[in-house]
Each structure stands twice: as structure tokens, then as C-alpha cells.
Length: 220
Figure: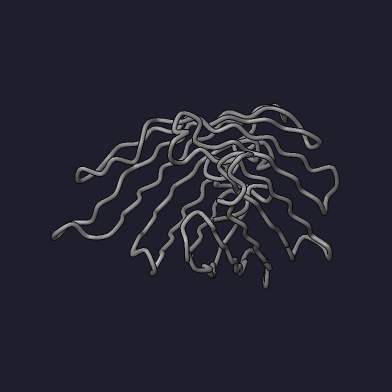
């Protein structure tokens, strides 16, 4: 997914503070496949800012995992997001509600907290603490930055995730490149590596995004 410092939408999935930068109403659909894990994720995200200083958004994720008999396992996640602030510093929070499917147990409902800053047009910084309330399994700190060294058409970013300051050996790192090849059409690629499990491989992902002022769709 998009790195949190670069987030426009899906802000609830990445950094709730990123919702503050989308401007007017925005609706995005995203489809994602992981061939190695045999999982499919469909997401629908809506958000908008009001009076230039407050943002509201909602996101729906349908996560389908490996098959259990004739049906897939999985769950649905609904995120409600609120953000406040401006260009130099914004803050946000998301409340995540999980609905299991086929006996899946995705975990308790959780909170996300985030900070984001865009001190210059070419630089974006982000910090998030995700899945508060599920400390034993998925709570994660995340730091990220994004740069646009040659204008808005090219975005470079990197992020670092870790469960806690005493577990840096379980970190996950990632990097992303996104290029607007023609107006409204963005090609992206990313690589990630996690050390939470011994022998976990590098993951590579490619994406295609069609984006307009108020609507967008991504296939990854």
C-alpha cells in the first residue's frame, strides 16, 4: 500500500493524519492481490476536508485469505477517521472495527494515531502508531518520508515499521516509486522486507492508479 508520508487516500489505512491533505471530496477504490499468501483485498475509501483544517473519512476493506474448503477465510474492516491541522503539522485518529468471516479471528477493534507534516512541496514526513488495543499481535510504530525531487510527477518514499522500541530486530522496511506517466495515470512499484519471521522473503509489488480530482482506482 501507499506509504504513510505519501498518503492522500486511503488515509485510514496508512496514516489518519494524511486525510488532512486530500482537499475536497475524494472516493477511491483499491484492489490488491498477494500471490505468495493467496490473499485478495478490496478497499473503498471516502474522505473530505472542511474549512481547510478538519477532515472526516471512512474506509471499508474486504480481506480474503486462503480457502477453507469451498470458501475463503477473511474479515471486513471498517475505519472511521478524523483529522485536524494544516500543511506544517496535522494529527489524526482512526477507529477500526473488525467483522470476522468463516470463523476468522482478526483481533479486537483498534485505534490508530498519526502525525504528518509537509514543510515543503517536495517533502512529506509521517509518524503513526497503529492497532492500539492489540499490543500482543499487531500494534506497530511506523516512520516514513516521501520526496518529489523533480516535480509532482515522480514520488520516492521509504518507511520503517517496528512493534516497539525493544523489538527493533522485528522491523519491516519498504521503499516505493510512483510516476505519473500521463496526466491521471500513475505507475508504481514497491519492495518490502520483514524480519518478524525467520526466512521471510522480500516482496515486490507493482500498481496502476487512475486518478482524477475526486475519483480514483488502484490495481496492485
